[in-house]
Length: 197
Image 1 (cartoon, rainbow, N blue to C red):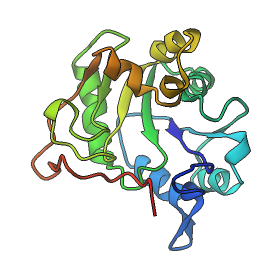
Image 2 (image 1 turned 180 degrees about the vertical axis):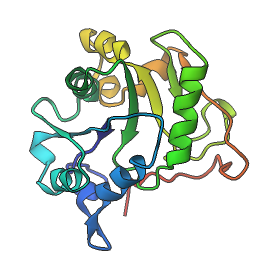
Image 3 (image 1 turned 30 degrees about the vertical axis):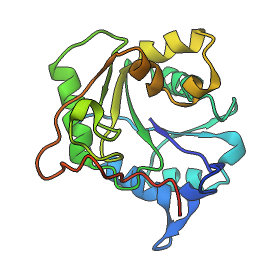
């Protein structure tokens, strides 16, 4: 499930900005399609920010989308709704501002998740920068969740900062595991996420 919105405050409309005549989100979706560790992809955008360009990018690649009508900042509920629609037991989360997401690093963390079972409320991630000193830069990988994680958090009265960032509860609860970055990717000081001009 790829989260994306146009209403970002640091870089408004970033997912629709054109790069070689295609919106930025098109490149994210195209790169994700090259991963082999899962069979379904969904773009989940808040209704107020879709602007058509993100949905058109998904349609052009044959990717279904969720035109989410709830609170645009409640990512926990948006992911729960998307997972329910897909009837997904496992959710791979990739933010739409990770323009350079690497299909190999997505597959690496998803395969690790399946090869190393864990409790359903533990997050498996190589998405953020240098998680537990793993050496990864930010924005190349993904997060892997059991879908029950979103259902559980959706029922809790969490503050807005936790509802907007699904991974923060796991980090604050010490329920995160990761893998080491391979040598050709190792660069813990760097970020490939697009937040600003």
